[in-house]
Image (cartoon, rainbow, N blue to C red; front, side, top):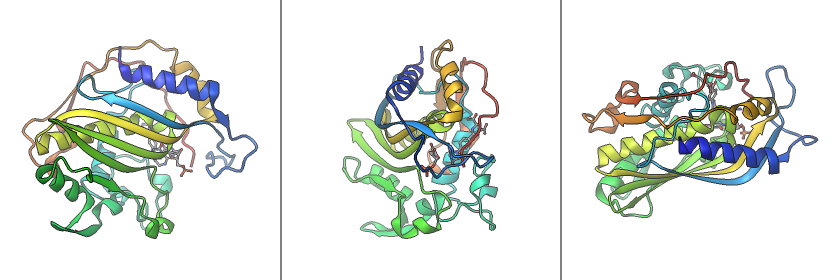
Length: 276
Ligand SMILES: Nc1nc(=O)c2c([nH]1)NC[C@@H]1CN(c3ccc(C(=O)N[C@@H](CCC(=O)O)C(=O)O)cc3)CN21
Ligand SMILES: O=c1ccn([C@H]2C[C@H](O)[C@@H](COP(=O)(O)O)O2)c(=O)[nH]1
């Protein structure tokens, strides 16, 4: 059975049984009809995914892996903040008149800084370090740029990744300040798992672990019955995942380069409401 399903079920049970409800508090997020989007949350969840063991896609409901990967490429490879450069509509509600999400995500990863080895952006700095100083303890990205926060249409949720090489394996810690468990937990987990696979392939490592640290892990009120039903569903083994082995340059990957086989899963849950 997929270990990712097991972790997800335990995390949801913990949030539902021991979590803290925001009822009665002032909350920022709203449902489409304007009602406050309350949550039940747990603080400080840490999930470890061994990428050697399995590709951590949920089987409890399908994760839209191509759309998730496309958003990852939009942020990490195209380094864009324009929703027209994204092949899905998941960011439409956060776009401004210019059709961008402001100085968030891809904008920050595309911003150049002066490093000892030259001027480059944070992604190229990670790739340079993995190729030249792989055992460094300073290989990380951080897009929570305080100077630009007021010009971001949503402050980054998954904001920092620390890469760490252990022997031949590439590991990563993903730091997330806020997580919408139903809509985006497995979405983010599979995205950053693919990122570790991509960087391992182009920098000459095997994949290791993804450690996902979530500060505020929440289930929105309108998602509670959906989660309650979902965690009772049958579980299947995780699918097999591979990347096109021909790709040697990080910037050459496309959504067509991921291969997912034997993805047995439960039916999709349609029209999940997204809090804005
Ligand atoms: N409340 C909230 N939750 C989020 O997950 C979220 C935000 N806001 N704001 C910004 C982005 C947008 N994200 C989203 C938004 C929608 C889906 C979504 O509708 N997912 C569908 C599949 C979409 C597809 O097939 O392309 C799903 O069934 O999970 C996922 C991530 C993640 N982020
Ligand atoms: O990659 C993402 C992007 C967004 N989210 C969720 C987490 C929260 O539910 C909202 C953001 O609201 P804040 O009030 O700014 O925390 O979006 C996610 O889980 N993953």
